[in-house]
Amino acid sequence: MNDINTIRQFRHDLYDCFVKAKGALFNTIDALLTETSAKSFPELSQSPWFERKWSSLYEAFEDGRIDEKRMREVFALSLPKADAEKWLWLGIDASKIARPDAVTSADRTAQHVHNLPECKNPVTFGWQFSTLVVLPPTPRSWTYILDQQRVSSQTTAIEVATTQLARLLPHLPAKTIVALDRGYDATWLWCRCSGLGIGILGRLKNNRCLYRVAPVPTGKKGAPRKDGDKLQPKDVTTHAEPDGTWKGMDSKERPVEVTWWKQMHVKQARWLQLTVLRVVRPHATNKKRDPRVSWFVWIGEPEADLAQIALGYALRFGQEHGYRFDKQALLWEQPRLRTPEQFERWSHVVAMVHNHLVLARDLVEPERRPWESTQRPATPQQVRHAINKLLPRLGTPARPPQPRGKSKGRSKGAQIHKATRFPVVRKRPKLPPIVPL
Image (tube, rainbow, N blue to C red; front, side, top):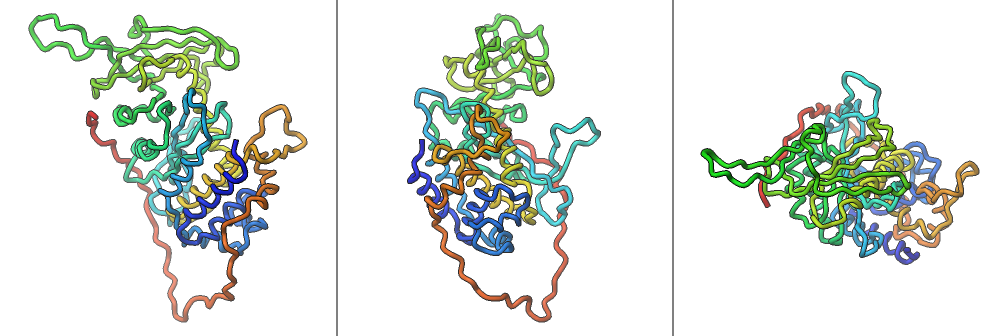
């Protein structure tokens, strides 16, 4: 549990992360924390905690600068303390910010749109952000953001995720597991993460081919076999005998079965030892969002409790709830900022506000609406409704604004040119070649 001095120090450290437009950017944090009725970006200026005019919102993200390295250090040092005997679960995922009509915004890429009705081309255009979070003990919105970075057109979400993990590795305990969804089923990523010294639990695609240890050479003519028998999730005939099976109940007292195969590998990286896990949930509806059979790959301690690790993958869905809170309540998608750099600064401010709420959840009494259940745990939005009572005790490190009078306006004879148009970058770069670590 955090005390008020911890939150106050967190706020002062964040203020030091701002290089330019420090006061306006920090006022935006307090406005976003408190103005729960705001439905658009300019409405944040109506908060009593934003001491400037509404136009200063846009100017802050146009002129401001944030020391991202310092910000990541502050997030990592303020990480809620976990039990040393338990695993620390992290999640990495990428989320899109749709900007299909923003022709004056640079570096927009094609983004697949999930959860749409069947159509010929479920694609939009915009920016993509990779987010590394600490997952809560139950799949809820209480994620803690460690890093949020835009995926440029010159790289991929997989490369960005690897960079994010490597940067934060010194701040992570040894008992750390990173949960990845099927979009990160890539041999290059597995090879890069295998040298980090932490556990990787990734969802497998059904057509992924893995191989057992090659058999002993027979002495016959020809080269000896490099790979053993194949294992492919969608092909039942390739499963053969597993190395272990566990049957029990999940956290909701529903039957579940976990099966694993050790010492597996892929042809592109035979040196990399993998463990394949299969989770069978008879109670599932067997739809796309609720499959009855799920497959995973484990890269980490081979003697770890594989059954509990496989069941722990359910914690990853807390990141989806965190994304929903950021977009619906914290207006992450709302501001129509022109450049990707401006939107990156806004994304960092959203992450700061999100982490504010996580650290302050034990210091305020959540405010529930009359129709909201008192039997359920408090949500970040309910804590946000009550944060107004805490902010006066915390204070603000930002200096009061200095009135500068009326602007002189444009100089006589100034020519206003049409904003530059940028094409959409449709082709994504490929992953680098695999190099053994």
